[in-house]
Image (cartoon, rainbow, N blue to C red; front, side, top):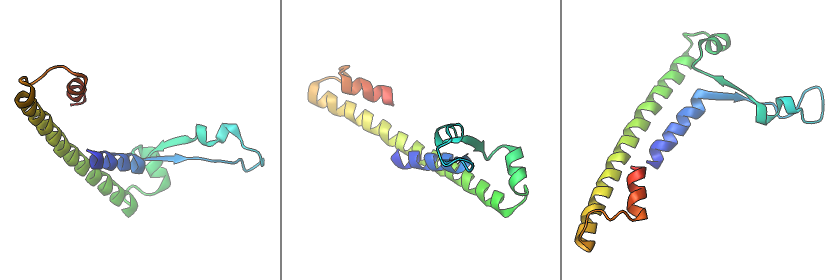
Length: 118
């Protein structure tokens, strides 16, 4: 699940680009209107930004879109595998609890939060 989450975060980092100015070019002091807290967010999937920067059929956009598709595909697959393992772990924990305590589910906080997380 951690690897799938990291792949998803890398997908977001590649898809969303932030333009930040830390210091104003006119003044040596920090300009609060253009500081890193109020930076502009540009989305790479918007047609106007892509077409303004480079041609639509450029190799850069093609390779970036291929990378985004591959990251999305693999993050979905890895998270699905992690969800399957989490399900198996919760079910095997319930079987163990039946052997150890005589009931599959006793509504204690660990079991309840494992179910909520699932």
